[in-house]
Image 1 (tube, rainbow, N blue to C red):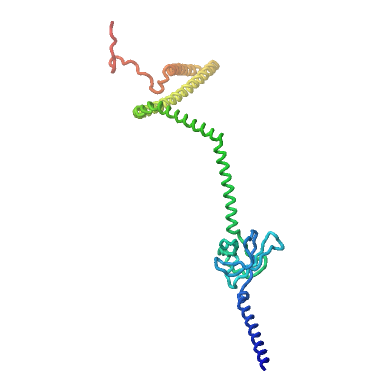
Image 2 (image 1 turned 90 degrees about the vertical axis):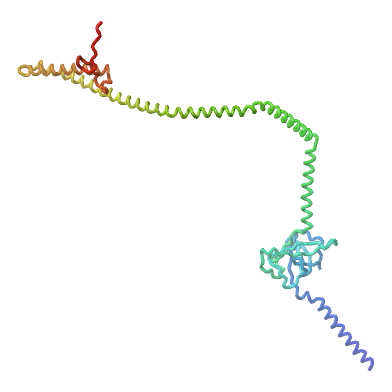
Length: 330
């Protein structure tokens, strides 16, 4: 009986122990049932990152790294599979970056969201749903340090070239040239100083001269106006004289035509006889007188063309007329 009781107790203990182990395993692995999986894609080194490394979202731990391996299609890519707590706010704009854990040399994954793509990223291992890994801060510092070192080296080389013997000689020559130029400028200033002192007097004389010229110009204005008026009168007189000369030319042509007609009439008078002859003689006499009068008129106009404008000059007044002056007796 005792052995049977011991067997029952041992069996119950075994069952309870097994149940406890199962419950403990379920208890410690309860988070795995609520986690989801994402894949990170990196073209940079992931040195210091190991499986079970923490995964943080803006500094809050939400999961762990499950595995790290190369992409079978593109060996230059490194794929990092992470397991994070379900319901974590991971969007299509989320990116990853490696951070250092103290001074141990290990790294963790930090997820950041810039808010440009707020759409939710469902858990997936597809290539289109991978999260890109940015260069780590250490890598950025290393690259920046290399660039700074390169620039510093370049600057040192330039300084070395600048401080070479040839450059120093050029600097000395340049300073000497500047000193000589300064001395020449001082000499020129000394030479110009007397003239500069006399400039106020010259300026005063120039102002006086300009004032006199201004007054002279104001005086010349009326004279120029009078000259302009006189020129206009002369122009008008020249046009009138040209018109009178044209009239004289026409009168001379008429006289010539009249002389030709007279000659024709004289020939006709010789051809006719009888009663017409005396009348023609009278007509010829009249025409002859007219011709003489025209000749005298043309002669007077030739001698005094102004007679067309002012008329014939008045003769001397006779006795009993106004303006008569008795000739003196010698």
